[in-house]
Length: 204
Picture: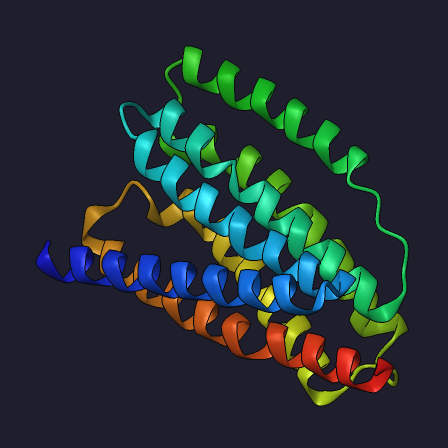
């Protein structure tokens, strides 16, 4: 239990540091990509707080987790801006609303945590999955090493979104889940600012 608490503190610290640094950079230079990066980390902070607050029942745990959708949308929009592709979040928002309905029905029927969580987890992961794959398949040559690494890191984040449905209700795997999350977070902390810095520097 102590290990899980330490990992949670580390996770929160990484998110807070990245939020502060991206806010400082945006205030200093006011570049659109820096604002997009700030939105990513701000959404991560809100999602983290919300998940901590919504933990009273399986359905509320899933609702709290669903705020990760906004992190995925922010990351998808950042990738779309980097590679100059169009991103529309509304269809994914509709899919999330449908997933809420499926999960709510499963909860009312007394379904397992997996049955309640999986539809929402898939809907949460969808915008980033589609955008990262599209960027890798259609803009591979345009992407720098950091850009490719960011997209691949986002795909790992997508996979971690989905494994929430399998790991969240198993306390014995909590430390494993948080360790995976921290490794992915560290990768995003490195490659997302690197890509933004490369593009801003090139523009200047």
